[in-house]
Length: 87
Image (cartoon, one colour):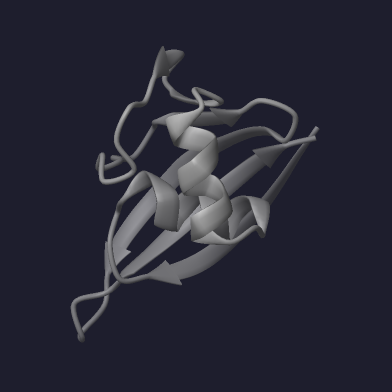
């Protein structure tokens, strides 16, 4: 089962997109990244500034997985990102 929704972010960083998808703060997600609980495409992420692209799978231990769907750039230079959350 999946749940699909869209979010508007100013960058495609792992901490920004995943914090919007899992509805937790970027600070909490940053500490989870440094403790090794966050993976992108099943490989460990060491920096919160890693950029994502369409089709990437972000998994956070204890929270679940997000798949990055379509990414559209707005007129103001922000990104509309379609997130698919696995339930």
